[in-house]
Length: 73
Image: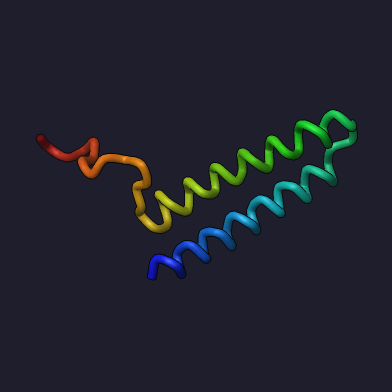
C-alpha cells in the first residue's frame, strides 16, 4: 500500500512539474527567465504538489507530531 502511494505521488509530481516547466519555456522570453525563473517555479510547483499529495489526498503528516492542533489536551 505504501509503495503504491509513493509511486502515485511521484507520478502526480512529475506531471505537475512537467506541465509548469513546459508552460514556463513557452511563455518566458528572456534568458534570465530561462536560467532563474523556470527552474525556481518548477521547484516551487514540486514542493506545493508534494504537499498537496501528502496532506490533502493521502492524509499523511510527514514530520508533524501525532497531536493535532484541533485536539483537546
